[in-house]
Image (cartoon, rainbow, N blue to C red; front, side, top):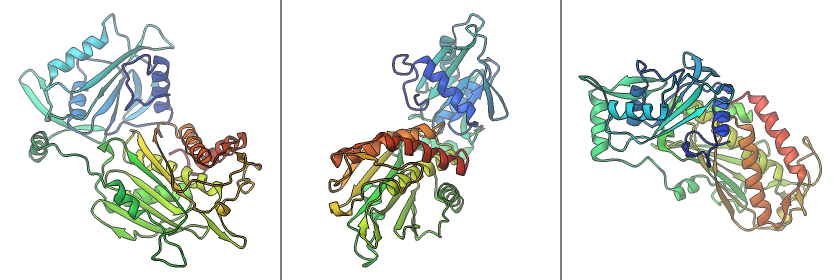
Length: 412
């Protein structure tokens, strides 16, 4: 399984044809509609408007067109392929773009034989967000500038055209909060002293790899994010504790009694931080169950929110945990949920101070397996830092728990 939006779709070695077709079918199976970054076409027709769509992608956030998909409206139905009629389609696609769009956008083209019918093909054209806009669509004496709006192309008005020209002269980097700044916001305090940062905490930050996920923080965007949190965790989000131009912060109380801090940024990043230990009659302890449950939640929330935003690119996941004292660790089972038995072999005994790990995460089109892989990878890093490894019981728990979580909320 690869990533149609970021992997090299032109390389058979890195992205085999079978994997590409699998990922296209997965998009269709999950009902992934057309949007700002995605368009389906049943055939490659010279009368069709697909060159205009390419120009619109180049002028907006980039995107991908998949040829050979039967659909209804913006909803895909099945992968049927198209009849090339003896034409070498990669050359035809490239020459059409050269003659119709100026300047030439940065594109990748892949043409594959349909695995269920050797007489048919499937083609993909992926275009990057342009660095020299505006990209003009030319046909005869007709010269137009298109933008991508939702699942449609729209002709740029005067103000939008001016913005594209300004972007060409003064390209601006995507909005991005300094990582250290976001880390400071994702800070939990000890209950005994609300001004003192906790000495035992963990934090997750999901940052989109592309600024195509950027959205202005409005009340509607906050409502979408809060609904995603509620659907996946079952908890309700209180009104934001702080609103700034590029970040909204929430402070909540978990069922365990621990504080939870959420942050949503205008570049599409989601942050999550909470206490790493729970206070009990026997003293404070760290539960691997809660750590995994929270990591699954942030992955699920990010999947749902990204789908709402029509962003399907990769994320960078940063995970940090700080537990200063070994006696705060509690080895054993995940409270007997789904499975019992040790989750680490040998048992978890200590965690290195401020253990951190980072990885790229792909949460589309089907979230269950990517979530399981990410959970296992992050928790394995945690286990290795503590001098142990995950047991087979852990994978048994993870699969069952993730499936249960996704069934509860419905597929993101």
